[in-house]
Image (cartoon, rainbow, N blue to C red; front, side, top):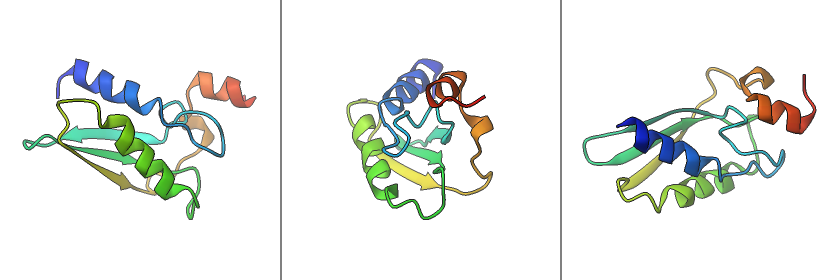
Length: 102
């Protein structure tokens, strides 16, 4: 995957807002990796802020919808992982400021 496509993907994922925190999943540090296979299937490896998040299905659906308009992507698989565990240090400076975290 070229850098321009990766930037487009990450930009689209910035439109996915965590409903509990009101910040996008990229700036929260929830997206760990994006990989495209030879059949143009994108795998988004990400985590959630907490195990058992009741909105996990909603976030996965939003990820798929956000990426639907990128023509290079034929299919999307969202892989939720728990390792490494998410923590506030993974957030961008923007997210920390928005949430009042130092």
